[in-house]
Amino acid sequence: MGEKGGFHVHRWFVALWVATVLFIAASAASAAEQEEAMYEKRMELYKKAEAVSLIPWYYFAAIDQYERNVRQVRRDLPKPAGVLGIYMKPDVWAGPLNKNPHDTNPFTISQFGGLGVDGDGDGKARADDDDDVIMAMARYLQTYGIDHRHIKIALWNYYQRAKTVDLILGKVKIYKKYKTLKLDDHVFPLPLRANYSYRDTWGDARGWGGRRIHEGTDIFAGYGVPVRSTCYGIVELKGWNKYGGWRIGIRDINNTYHYFAHLNGFAADLREGQIVEPGTIIGSVGSSGYGPPGTAGKFPPHLHYGMYKDNGYTEWAFDPYPHLKAWERAERQQQRRR
Ligand SMILES: [Zn+2]
Image 1 (cartoon, rainbow, N blue to C red):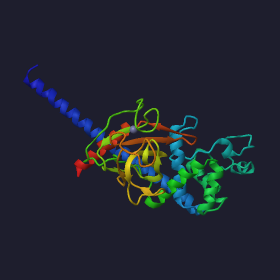
Image 2 (image 1 turned 135 degrees about the horizontal axis):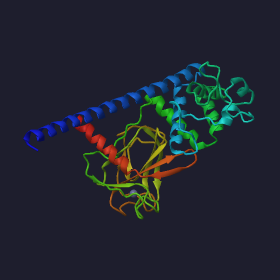
Image 3 (image 1 turned 30 degrees about the horizontal axis):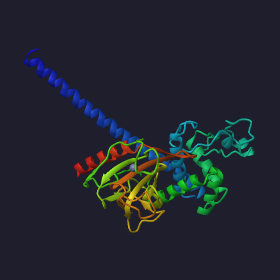
Image 4 (image 1 turned 30 degrees about the vertical axis):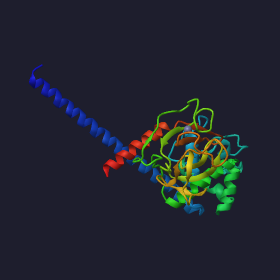
């Protein structure tokens, strides 16, 4: 092939490359737009339920978000059909004694004690219709009362699990404070300018995390390097543990528990129940653990970072390494852009 042909091929590649970049940029933009529209649609439903029931929208947002995350990690529950995560089982929707578990007649459903209602006025109470589902939840909560204490009792009776009620009420607090549903931002637990190193140690036989199999990532850094919250969440735990040393647990909006161990100490004003944001300083890197409170120096200073997920029954650890990598990368890109 002569000079000219080579030039042609080169031009063709450039054109293809430009087209690919444009395509990726366009699909990224439309994905962001879709996400935006979905958040708006959800907020509309919550606000509609608030207008009818006088129960603040953030209770619906919290219940919905809790259930959405449970459904994402459970195989025994169907995936959401609309924008809501709330799922009412057929016998709950239609009534336990209803011979038709898929009844959509609001009258017979109420006769059999089902929670299903017609929320959008189409004459049908459908368990896969977002308007009907949000209104069914609103009506159910309303039967107990519309203040915090009564909503709490309603949640207790509905879920029959203390942890679930705590998780939902934690989200209520967060949504109430930020007044938005978009609370998915994350940052790396240490400031990126600090000297640190880490690698994927998931499942290693030994570790200084306090479990027999290493459930987390060890990020090695010097004493006193600030440790930051990786997410929007609530401080669920703060204190000493024989293996973890001084440690903090933060529950985020996705039912995920972020665990920080072997700290040198805590941020001065940090308390359990406090709301934190990505970047909030919660303590500093240390080597505490493996003995009575205050024990330190039995291993090199590092942050043990763990992530746990709740599925409505139980909680399990998953590998934080890919998330750490992604957050670190995203934060570096953001810094470059500034
Ligand atoms: Zn560890």
